[in-house]
Image (cartoon, rainbow, N blue to C red; front, side, top):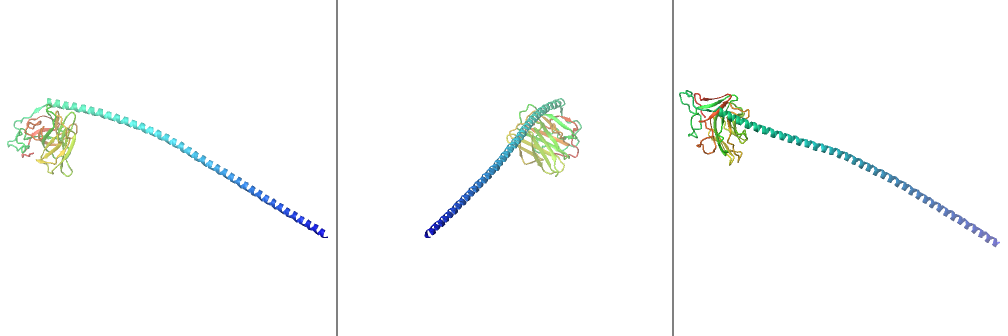
Amino acid sequence: MEEEEEVKEEEIKEEEKEEEEKVEEEKVKEEEKVEEEEVKEKEKVKEEEKVKEEEEEKVEEEKVEKEEMKEEEKKVKEEEEEGVKEEEKEEEVKEEEEKVNEEEKKVKEDEEEEQARQKKREEDLHADIATTRRRKHSWSNPAGTKPALQISAPNFLDFYPELKRDLQDYSFIFSHKGYVTFEVDESQELLQNITVCLCSFSDSPAKQALFSYATKDQDKEILIEKVQGLDGSWWYTVYIGGVPQRFRVPDFYQEWQKICITWASETGVLTLQFNGKTLPRKMVRQGYFIRPHALVQLGRAHHEEIFFQGEIQQVYMWNSTDSVHDPPMIEWSNLSYETQGNVVLDHLPWPPYTC
């Protein structure tokens, strides 16, 4: 009986053991299954990550391709723009060359025109001088032209009493486009110092030329002009070697205007004396020399439509600034001249009016 119980116990134990082994086996299988599932899950995740990486790589590649395409398009566009710019640059260079050629052509034409004008001035000057030589008039007082009562003369004699009085009672009367020409001795040397004096009387406020000394090289070697301003004051413009300086003279009613200009090459100082008063001095053309062989015109600017209306008298010119005792280059008392247009030489009326 005891043996049976022992056997039975043994069987029970055996069954329990088998049951335990079975449970253990199932547990192992379950663990293996779980591990297998974990491995599969990991592989799946890994596969998904790989796919994701591939997709990201693909996206990145596409992005790079797009960037490359953009760069390529940008490069092509830049090349096109550079080509356009190069064409524009070439066009600009071409235009600049054409402009330079036009300027050179214009300069050449200007030079040719200036040479032609210079030649014309020289021809006109020689023609005027030749005409003046052919038609010279030496002044002498016509019989019976002076009034019975001697007239107080318009003159510079208050300052220079040694001057002759041959024409002291006479003046040139200028009307529309009238002027007087005469020649300066061509044997003179280059002028380093000058003095020019004259008297004028006019009621015209327009710009007017009083005295013109023109050479073949310079129309305005010496030129004296005047104009009345809006305020009634007079302005004198004096040219030396083509360069102007302006002087404002004191206010006055219509009356004779007596001026003297002096200029010295060494200093360039230009002085204008107006009715006995010296105005503020100016400086012009220092070191310049005035040519001696010239055509002088009263009442007109040489080669310009600037004339004078009124009276001019007592015209003198010296090649000095400090000695009017020397023989003048131009002398009112011994003047060979030619009149052009509406101008006459006449004695002063009564009652006298003086400079």
